[in-house]
Image (cartoon, rainbow, N blue to C red):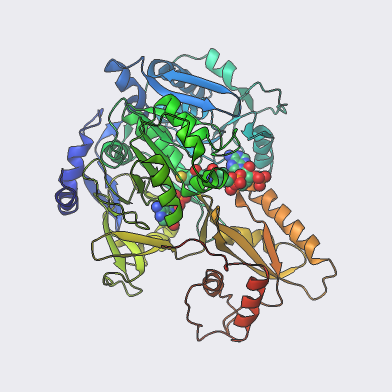
Length: 635
Ligand code: COA
Ligand code: AMP
């Protein structure tokens, strides 16, 4: 296939292009309409089609004679477990759990929160919801009860499915007590909490809403798939925005299934039956699309890995998994490779394993620096493909589409627009910029199938955040440029969202917690460069004049509180006390200026600044704390 022709077809005739692709699915009612603009800028894909995601991921393959093939390989170095789960077994687990949820009174359209570690029951739960048309919302285990409570209040789940505990290397994470705390904090109370006991000797405090997962499954009848409209929400996935409140991305069913099925072959180059591994977590979009739905739709074997790139037990784990399970395509974040490279700079561990099954290494989640790209290429000896996307898109927006036509890799670029994404780089006035000029990365509407449909309970925020800035376009929140060969380079977020170790976090959310410290008069939290995690948050705080506490004590209290309120994943470890913050004359903190100074970027001093001398003061503080002066990422 020729990429240019294929891409052109997808942009010139999106209706025909995606209608053809939708035929790869088995619909209960085949769609006759490709897409429909239901409101200005909001498009629904295949609005008259009906289908069931769990059927497509499981039953369909059994009907086609592949029931005995591996659907999931659960590899858990933290519990020393390896388990092969066939499509037949997956069917039994999912349909019985779905029967159990039905017996609790759950029905199509109800919402369910899933707060679980990386265990098969997390996947069974997602698929059981999909089987019944329940809308799941998976919450990442690294978030604290307060964050979970925010999500409970927003999506009002009828039930929560959780586990007794998670395991972070050797540390037990008490999931069930976190759920209890979150329910206590939330105004909305779910009717049931279904708990999977991992039988690791962890205490499960009893509450009247508790239901034992195993007992529920044991006494239940299998449930058959419920046919839903293509536009029916499959899930809500909360992601960080520019305010303290996370936003619930709504994903449809039919458009998403079409896009994911297409992406497995065309973006990742895998065929049915291949082993595919996305080393992420089910709590993130990568987990939804490429641990669960994408590979299972495409009848691949998906790897469910409960471990870390290092320390479980060492930097060889990834290579052992690839070699042992014959992984053909792997997907991880550059930060994971940086962690491995730090422990094993010469790639000694890689040489110990037969890596011949691996055809491509994909990277995403954050910008890939040159050193990481080169190290990975040199040691894995396969094409290393950076691709760009986000929770909102649900699948790649920029990629070297190896299943269509592989192009040479240009370091620093995630290559070309994926078919269906009409990408434009615009300036502040909405005009197309010339080659090599940085601008706002946007997608001309309509977005292809698979992308967000709206924000849960907040359509106004959806329009304000994504559609209104450049009418007729979706605004991604990222900056970037296109070079003369058409390669697109993403330069980073243009808002206050940061990316720490491939985890998307909101500085506004952290600021709310920092500002609530009784001794803090005002503060600014923003992302600064980190050699390992790409970015890390830094809090600059101005203390109240009457403060008598030591700065160290205040910093420790703030760090503890952020961990307590947002979760360990927030990774705020640097709090610096300053005399004042740069502001405009009207009193607005100049966060962008702080970001630019810390990143050693060229910047213009805004004409609205109230006192220009503050810049040298801030530079002095950054120098003292070695912030931004050790930038090693280069292209
Ligand atoms: N449940 C509970 N706690 C969690 C968690 C989870 N699921 N995931 C992370 N945490 C905790 C960690 O234990 C750590 O706690 P600590 O501060 O007590 O040590 C904290 O959150 C920060 O975690 P992280 O930012 O991941 O740092 P780390 O030092 O533990 O690990 C890496 C560094 C690079 C090994 C790790 O971040 C990694 O594997 N990143 C890849 C991320 C990824 O795949 N992202 C998906 C996008 S494709
Ligand atoms: P998330 O929604 O958590 O997947 O995070 C999405 C954000 O991560 C994007 O908006 C980008 O800022 C960043 N990102 C993801 N992939 C890449 C990539 N390949 N290159 C640069 N930035 C990326």
